[in-house]
Length: 115
Length: 111
Image 1 (spheres, each protein chain N blue to C red):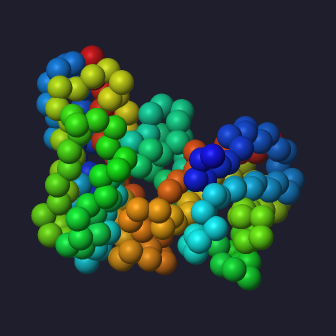
Image 2 (image 1 turned 120 degrees about the vertical axis):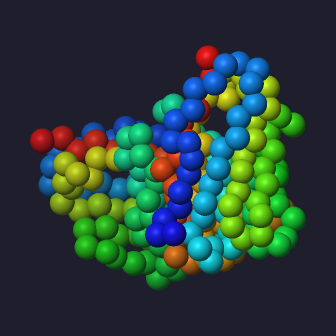
């Protein structure tokens, strides 16, 4: 597609429920990132996929968080047993390659609210 | 020490002023640097890359100081529309090769 697409744009869920967030990167972009941004805070790195390499999961805050990517296409971020502190905007970004010489393109994010 | 650090601001400046932000990084092996702009409740968007020799794009100038491990962004003739949060991005080679975002510097240009 023309840009990075994320869905849903907004999600309200009850504490304890599982949620799944989706990211469609720009076609041909091999690198894909997930970030979390709490209200008024900076971007917090969660996970990084690069081609067929093993993902860098070093930013995932707990084992309730997991992410998958099918080849060089869609990625899903799953949060199990959601907690109120998971409330944030979850941003996905993609780039043409590891070097990201042209920078990343971000999706417009999924705003998650856990009530 | 954080891998990438920025003064959160806010920097409140009048229209037409010149303002500069710095961003320090801890990994001396870092090679790629960017400035992003993020408007309120919007996703970050690439503003400009930062090249070793420094680079300019209209009213914006980016510079790299490898010896002191910081990058800078200079905005001349500030416009109201420049009000935003400016994020610096630096690559890291610790673990996998990836990019780390600073927490951003907030700029408010006042009429």
